[in-house]
Length: 74
Length: 205
Image (cartoon, rainbow over all chains, first blue to last red; front, side, top):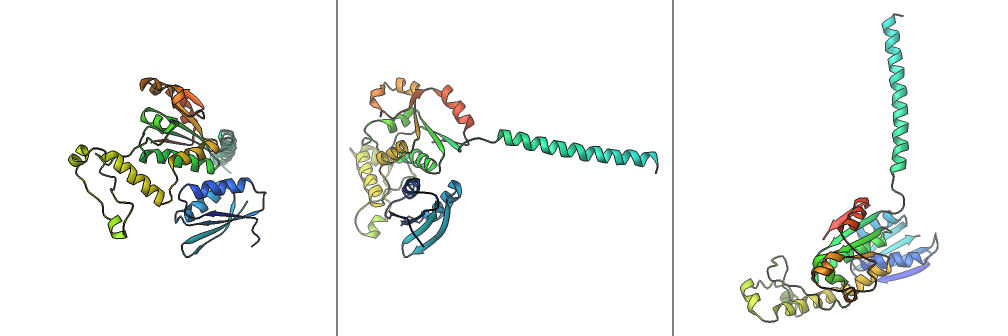
């Protein structure tokens, strides 16, 4: 996947991964893709709800060991 | 065809026509009533301890991240959350049986122990509250939970409207210079309640 921007939220807990994701998306253009890495287990459901509420597309959500990786399309 | 049947047919046709018109009118009215702009949330923050500083700031910053219009009304002890210096916020397990007393250091088995210290003991040990506060701050840091001041800064940056209750500012002898400059307004319940009335989500913390 062609990633336009990367965001590392490892070690951060609610609400910071979502707050930082929102901020990162704000600086991006429509159609661009953001990759977010998190370690907060709550971010799995939070990211899905965030995407639904804000109209961004959650392209994928995967778990790799203790990390959660999300691809969001603005 | 008898006269009775004709009337029935006419009734049905009138009923159908009325249904159509009513359905259209209702839809038009609903479209007019639909809220314009983003969803909104109002929060009343009434507590001034380190633990209770978190819910209003977490919910407000999350709401702002979702694109909502958020206003927080700080009243009574909640005013402490608007002070310039937040380092004096404390937490106490005294008379707070819901709060676990766990050590933020040492081996895992040790950290898992919940120190059930009787209220009577907590109340006579000098500095017990400060000790509990230090331990809580360390736990917050260890778990990667944001600092209260940082969360408040996030709220300010994301446009959360911070409102102070004028009556309690006067009641507790505060002056506006005790609070951060980002307080958007000092007002009363009469100003706040109509805002809460129009909000989609309204919380009391």
